[in-house]
Length: 212
Image 1 (cartoon, helix red, strand yellow):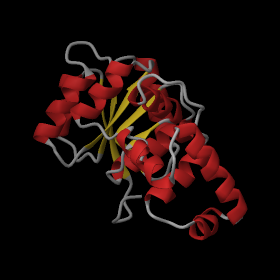
Image 2 (image 1 turned 90 degrees about the vertical axis):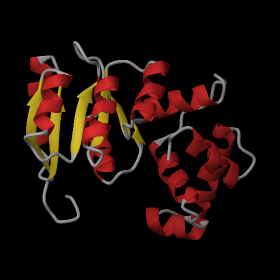
Image 3 (image 1 turned 180 degrees about the vertical axis):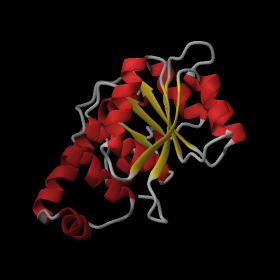
C-alpha cells in the first residue's frame, strides 16, 4: 500500500494483447495494486496519464512507434512524480543503461517470477531503484568491465543492502533473523563475488552498479 493506505495505482503499457491481459490479471491478484489505465502504445499511455491518477507505469521497453525509453523521458517531463518500471524480454546492456538514463527506477525481465515483478513495482512506488536479480548481475558484470562474477543470491542482496545502510553484523542478524556467524559468512562471500576488499568497497560497487 502507499503511505495513505490506498492501492498503488498502475498504468500498464504493453502492445501484445494476451500479455497485457495476463499481466492485468496477475497484478489484480495483489490487494495493494490497482490497474487504472491500460494502453497498447506509448502515445496512448501518455494520453492516459492526462486522464488518470497514476503512481507507477509498468511499460514494455519495445513498443511500436515511440519505444519505452523515449516514452519514459516524456513521462518524466510531463509527470515527474510518476515512477517507471521497464519490462523487457531481453537483458541487453544498451537497454539497461538507457532505462537508467531515461529515468526509470526499476527494470524487470518478463521471464522473472511474479514476486520479483511485484517487488519491482512496490520498490518503484517508494522511489527506490530495483533490478531483478538477473538484470542486476548483468549490470554489475558490465560495470566491472565484463569480468565474470559469481551470481549474488537473494540473501546476498538483502545483506548487501543492510551493509550499505551502515548496519553492523549484529543488527543485520536481528533484522534477517539469522545468526551473526551466518552474516559474517555471507559478507565474506559477497566480498569475494564483488571482488571487493572490504564492506565499504562492496557497497560502493553495488551503488555504482545500481544494485542498491
